[in-house]
Amino acid sequence: MSLTLLLATLGLLVQGSSGEITLTQSPGAKSVSPGQTVSISCKASSSDVYGSNYLSWYQQRDGEKPKLLIYLASRRVSGIPERFTGSGSNSDFTLTISGVQTEDAAVYYCQSFHVINSQYVFTQ
Image (tube, rainbow, N blue to C red; front, side, top):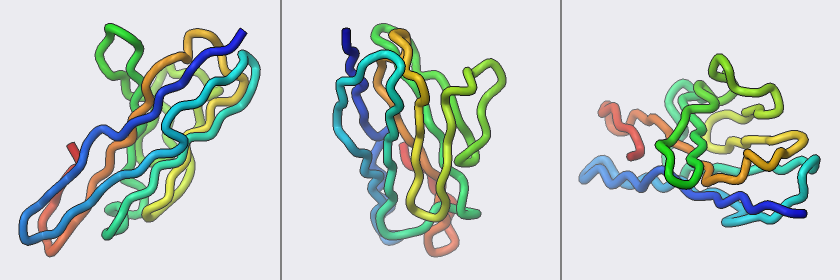
């Protein structure tokens, strides 16, 4: 039995004269078996993430609202299982799910915060 994790970004930021930031996640989709470990990469273009760690991860199951899993790159939200871990800094981040369970079938998003030309901006 396998399940599919769909990976996407929470958005593309275009900030006029401040430039453009995109978040790129990979792989785009992955089919895994329960018990396996999967890593999801999130890379920011152009500008490093503010404070090196203002990166969040969300999970959205079918028909549900996005749920915050990880904030500040590696801090797990209370109540989120320990199998979800975040790591990375600057512009390169990873969400790892160790021992994937069937309920982990979902879309996973990363979201970042940047300072560009003294302007504070989120990807959205």
